[in-house]
Image 1: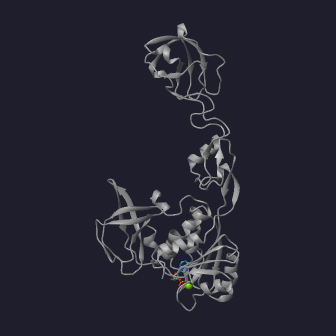
Image 2: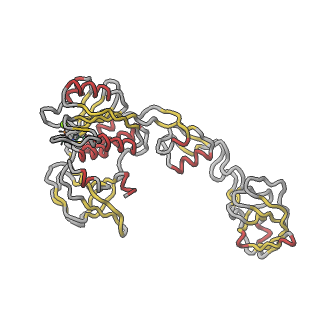
Length: 405
Ligand code: AMP
Ligand code: MG
């Protein structure tokens, strides 16, 4: 059985970045830039006041207080047609261009207007450059301000807007097909009869794919027979990424891996030393689509998605970092791991008094989504550790939902 780390390495090695597409600026957040982007203007494009106040020649106010003649008013959006001579000031608003001759701005709070005399008293001196962003001080026209491979955060969206990029070259988001398998599964709208359960995995995975920036598509529920499985899995192989759940353990009706092979897929592994989530089939279709046969147990399926599939999706989308966010945390209660596998225990992690604390939840097992739904992270118990004690430092894998609960 391979380790979680080995499985992740294999999965990432087999994953290719998707091709580039152009998307409207408003849809670019959460994607990754596929080309260097240069600014088409100097930034700022003129010497810009960062305060409401008075544009001055700093030498005129060296011995403040000093009285200056007010020769103009420069609101944002205008451009001064005059230059400042010795002894002169201009009223200026935040974001407005300095007139030639001025080299600083004194904020309005440190001035006293003498409107009857068209003058202003500057109460404190300013040094050259005070409250002014010089022309081109952030970037010069033609300079690359965003390199290929940059993640498009909201701040990056703003920068792209400022430099006139209404369409953005990004790596394509994967189309992800999601198939549930199992004779016992019924629709969400049905009341399960004896022996039946509702298909929840498809919905969990749909949400995860969407959260990861992919385009999920539900492909229904396959019955545990070769015909139905073959037809529906063949459908799934057309996607950039295909996720099936169930039918990958040792049972008589666990046929998913066999069908993958029948359909010409290359299998890379089918077991991982991980709890939950030992049976996992990773494969690739003849046409290059990535394939995961995830366990049927709901907690296992969603956990394997986080540990393996999310990093694979990040690589497809060109992310600079594939790995999930890990932190060291202080354990608040004892934890036992008799599985002989690396244990990803659903946990609640929070930050308090300068450190992370983690409380593994008392789960009833890998079918227990009631408990799992309360978690925001996984506490990772190493493969060879059987008993963890309170106050120990442990590694925690944060999920994106950590930041919201
Ligand atoms: P399997 O891996 O197919 O043997 O399934 C393991 C367990 O997960 C069984 O209890 C199944 O009923 C359950 N299970 C399988 N698929 C789903 C699903 N789509 N939604 C909820 N539970 C499932
Ligand atoms: Mg099954």
